Amino acid sequence: MKQGQRQVEQLERLHGMSMSNILANDRALKELSAKVGLTFPAYSVLVSSTNDTWCVRSEDEIHVPSASAKGTNSLPLAETVRFVEGKFNGQAITHPKSAFSSEWETNGCAFRGTLVRTAQGDYLVIEQFRKK
Image 1 (tube, rainbow, N blue to C red):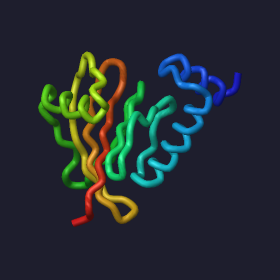
Image 2: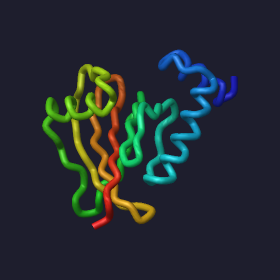
Image 3: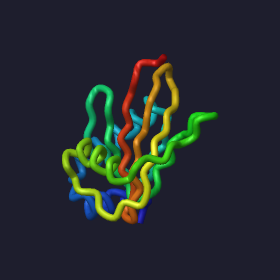
Image 4: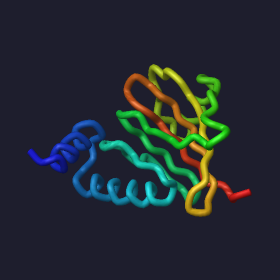
């Protein structure tokens, strides 16, 4: 079985996505990847987006860049889970293990990623800001 076919079946099974939704998700993630300078793991799903905020869910760890001197910042778990759940349209996050944020610049834009890591995968909120 080809890798692409496995990915389609996995997304259909895990997220109940139709083939057209899978293709649209793939295109949207590729565009987002180019814009924010991140590579998303296979089976990632763009859950929601606005002009300056994107919510991505993945069963695998999402690696966000650490700003050279700043690195990543640990965040209070309960507060961060509430923030991320709100951005994910109220989707419940179960068994959170850690939360952190990272800031980076790419393509002339500044971004902040807020990530909650769980036993079942990662929930990432990416926000775009005006470059200082």
